[in-house]
Length: 435
Image (cartoon, rainbow, N blue to C red; front, side):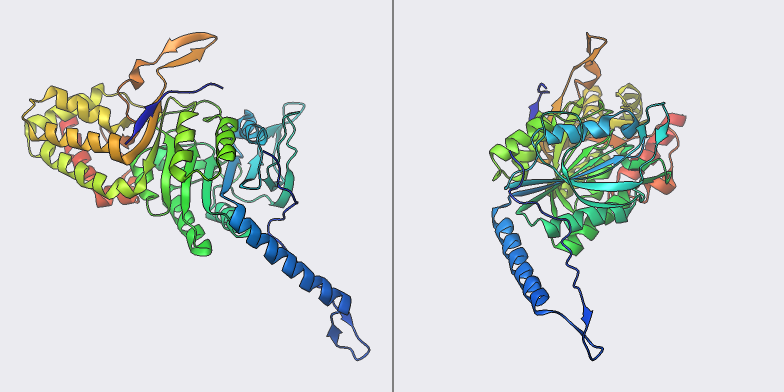
């Protein structure tokens, strides 16, 4: 059952250094006949290394509970404002352990000493080690590569698939930190001037599965406005649980050090428990965890509600009126689905079929689809507490509802408008708005 939470307040390194990935270069030397041979000493070295590496990986596969992959897309304002580096610092407060390995790949735009923008020459992958003393990144570098587009499928897929192979684990979590634009994409790279579309993100997660045989147990997005029906539905086949926020969040959306404390104290925890920890320690206004296996049943109930509303002209007129009253998040025309449905239900008679269908849909959303959710009804501005009653009705899952025109060429690339009746509902509703 989905459980509401409210915002909280704000280990040790692996025993032996590990490399990512492991490479062995064989040295050859010519013999007197002009052919190549391995010296006996080199043969013995290669054999011993092979035994050592295979034995080490086997032991790690047995003992490592979690591999936490963190993709920090900071070649944008998230790098310039220091939030991308802050994520790494928070994670370094706890670091990795024998049972929980944290890998971070990052690229950053940074401000130089004279205010100039410094562009990254390479992307860095770290295995995190505990560091509570200073703000410098002190974890070991296990891979570096010339700068490549962080919004590309190649960059994310290579990092995740190689990490999964090099650090075998029972469970895998992937976290994407960067700029978010809801169903329109995330992780904009200011050098390439591109962002990763949601279809491309789904294709990337699929590629990771095809290369490793591992489905992502928990996918977390620390990016604005990403917890939408369109996004979670697109990713449904390749991630078991998806955590994110409907709204624009603070510089850093989670108290990462507190989450790592919990998983290191109980590394055997399953993906649901770790997802709940992220929701509990979220600093976003509205945050939730979605169980993707429940999305087919959710879609059936949503279509049932659409049928009940669209069959009645009075209900359609009410739907148009209530759309104007429903709070829109920072992403234009992105609204909380259940807030919208409940507003319509309150304006119709209790006997109306849409009321019954709406209650059934929202009950399923809260109790089955959402593992947990949290909302914060206040924020701090210059030391003053500001109430945010607009989030009072939010339940944790947004949906796109344009009131006039929309970018159909982009939106209709997604699976959700094709597989549901929501697109038809939007078209009928647009007629109501123009009357």
